[in-house]
Amino acid sequence: MYSMKNWSGYLKWTPSDVYLPNTENEIQEVVLKALNAKKKVRIIGSGHSFTPLSLTDDFLVSLDNYQGIIDVDKEKLTATVKAGTKLHLLNDLLFEHGLAMPNMGDINQQSIAGAISTGTHGTGTAFGNISTQISKIKFVNGKGEIVSCSETDKPELFKAAQVSLGTLGIITEITLKCVPTYKLELIIDKERLDTVLENYQELNKRYRNFEFYWFPNTPYVMLKLVNLTNDEPDKSSFSSYVQEMVLENYTFKIACEVSKVFPSLTRKISGIAADTIGKHRKVNHSHKVFITPRLVRFNEMEYNIPVEAYREVKKDIVNWINKHNRTVLFPLENRFVQGDDIYLSPAYQRDSAYIAAHVYNKKEPTKYFRALEEIFLAYNGRPHWGKMNTLTYDLAQKKYPMFDAFTKLRAEQDPDQIFLSDYLKTLFIGY
Image (cartoon, rainbow, N blue to C red; front, side, top):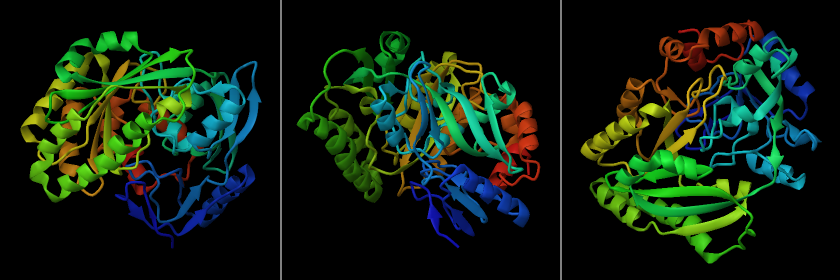
């Protein structure tokens, strides 16, 4: 038995066997072994999911030994990569070929397969989630078969595989639609929340990538405003180190510890944190700008809502937190994403806003998350699949128009349900 835990330490489990295959054939062999032994199989990337997607008492597969670029087509601007490739390695390798991902989130520790399988996203109304950046997927299904699908070959299966929670099989290869390398200018600034809520649509038009963090129980937010630039990348600077490491990590870690020991001080600490926001500029290649170091561990819940409902949802969230929150210090992250046509994407058929709530990993998050989740669900919210939520089969079926089409395709690819853990059965079967 092996002792496992996710990044935040909230989830712990003991699979009977852990496999680290080096080739696609070895991945296929694990699936066939599980079939013969009537065992379940789950897959783990970097453990950055806060839902029990990787939990199993049987076989756990890690693709940490299966990383790298397989092929690059510079004319078509595509790159085929091994599914276990971590995003930080992927971006460095693409950069060597003069290529980049069109958009990213702010963490680069996940595997590319884990990122697309859970619907991971960045921000920017001209961009969908990371799954919209792929044109072909290859996986080993629950019958031990190697299956390929793309935008033109088995397109319905492809739409299911783009966000699949690892329930169709083990993804082995992903073909990415890339762009030539580009540079970005990031501006960090302070603003009042009411001003941002009044002007967020204009900010989305003015900036390639716009997001903001609201400090709970204060009237202030930290803005992150990003546009293309031709300026030369910054050299490493003391100001960047102070912003990214001292203020956003080391100092914030101390603040979280004080809040944990003295919860009555939480609101005051939040106000002090908001007061420390200063203007900061950073210029670098895209993959160096998108990423923010995250040394303070947390648990997270994030919901997608229709963008037209955003202002009302945000007002309800702010009202609840200002009235009831006494112990949560983490800012709430607000991002915006273009709609898509991926069956289980939270942004399916709607331009969307995402609101993410975080709780320091040494504090219990359940009560806080459930209160906010009630608000999200009241506005037809859909959760990020890798973030904590209480979605069940009945609710998922109501919220995703293509849910039944997905489950049918899923059953065809995995008739013996070897990729369905107890948690995933509650989502895709109902028991």
